[in-house]
Length: 198
Image (cartoon, rainbow, N blue to C red; front, side, top):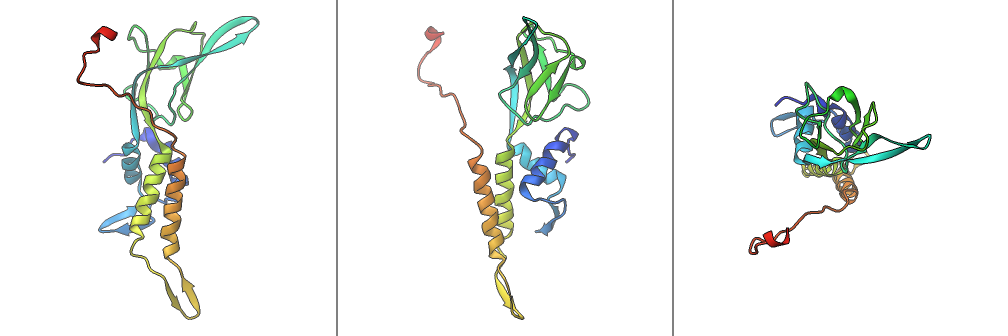
């Protein structure tokens, strides 16, 4: 598997959240936990594909005039676009792409800043957003599972409480689970015809 360069920054942040080095340990014939490929696999399990999200425009008052330079997504922690606009791009309501030279992106905060006033035009974003808290909780649980065969022992007036490591991992998993917030979904009944409601 090739590690996507657009995830480099998110992988670095995730390493800091999980105390995961590039070669912490080997397990079951798999070397180098946690290399970049393993981190990417966890991130991909916590990926949300955003398709045509209508961005929220931010009003900027200057000299009594309203300008629109900044737009905000409801999501954060986007994968950076690499080698073109296949991963992250913005479209006009007509479906035409907005040239990437016309804006800059804060991928972590989900904010897009345009070089010129857009006049409040309706714009849509397509990209890949990642739940870093969910990914961190996932990694901490895996680390706890990998430590399940550790045991406490004493020798030469020293005591080694290795089981504390597993407990620490589970506490960190619970910590990041609690930061994920509430998920929202839309439920629809399949046994009724709702065409009259539209």
